[in-house]
View 1 (cartoon, protein in one colour):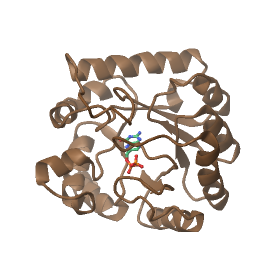
View 2: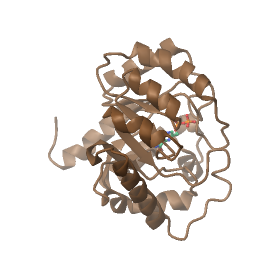
View 3: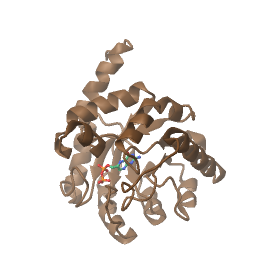
View 4: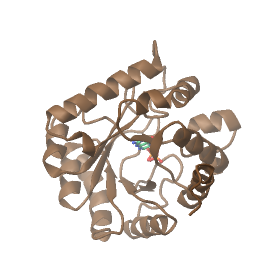
Length: 259
Ligand code: HH2
């Protein structure tokens, strides 16, 4: 899954694809590099970020979705707002990626009738404050229980299991130690029986262990993506698609898959 941030303030590429034409061109480039899904987001969720209104978010996303109509791969929209979900699905999005796991009032109902895919992600707190003092008794058990509860809520709302992907939400209300405990035990999230999405790309935990700035975390991001896939992740959400593809080819070759 290649990331297309139509934002002025995303933590690693804010402003680069804020112009809709630049965003569409970037999505096309990511597919050429081998992305199987593109994830279009118009609201930064970096720690400390302040939200934008639904109108503002839609005005950013809509022209990009228009430019990606009949696109070669499924388009996911990264949003937590039911209004944006409904408009995105009407404009042809195949998947909603919700960092709040459809907890907003009306979100389950916005997605259920569409038949689209949905990524349910765990976050402790909200982006503005989530990195202040993340705390868990047992991070793996709590994340797994939350995701299980949200999957049950989604199924109750009429969203079939086949449509659901789960994500432990690396970096969302988690310390460096929490992120690595989750990575080490990712198989317990995969044991929920649904595809797992992992988003490690350029994140600050990688900065914390390497001492590198966001635009200099490629090597660390590739290592984290490989470790996540080895532990059961089926989708990796990344900024650097071509390099991640190559890294994953090395892993696949271990299993005898060389094409
Ligand atoms: N991470 C980010 C945004 N959306 N969605 C899922 N499912 N999983 C993630 O790990 C995830 C996500 C943060 O990355 P980015 O989009 O590059 O930054 P920003 O939120 O600043 O736009």
